[in-house]
Figure 1 (cartoon, helix red, strand yellow):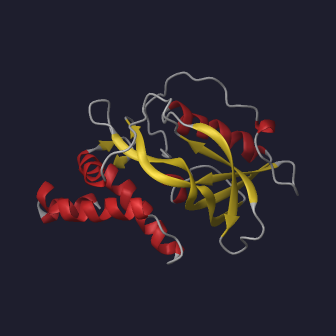
Figure 2 (figure 1 turned 180 degrees about the vertical axis):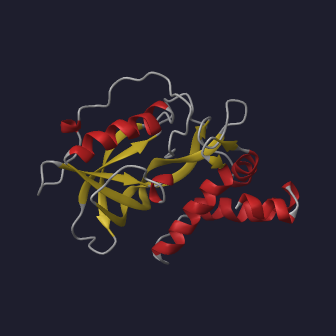
Figure 3 (figure 1 turned 90 degrees about the horizontal axis):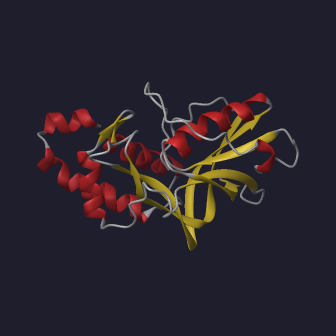
Length: 222
């Protein structure tokens, strides 16, 4: 999920966000909306929110299958960022943010640029299970990149994805930072939070990094 601040460049013109009334709302507060982040939103939402919960969604797996030509890459060298893949056995950990009142329209306007215009993502309703209260699920809005968007790269061996990540940088920083921050988040979630795809790419990067640059430069990247 290409979830980054839009830097200083002026984004291309876009259609207005879908009216917020069409998005899932908190049953207890019709003015509230939950937004699920599973990529860079977990460490940098960059919009005002009232509450946040760590947890997971079922039926989806996280994959580094979306190309990024702005935040973590360029037109000539697209970076790799995450999207959600429908997977009956899948489970993806992330953070749900609650926005209320005026926060709703402000967050949706911001995310429309960050995710839809610059990222190629569409919105999707998901069921979010809070880590501390999985028996009290919430409906949430998630941004998902599908194969129909022009930036979609699709599957590749983890070693090839690692090579691409090591070579790419965009306006929001190096693609490696994106990978490692996501891995750090998963470690904080505890041993019950597993992501074999992410772990395999991190392992591949660890093996390749000394070959890409000297130790001092490698440390500077992270």
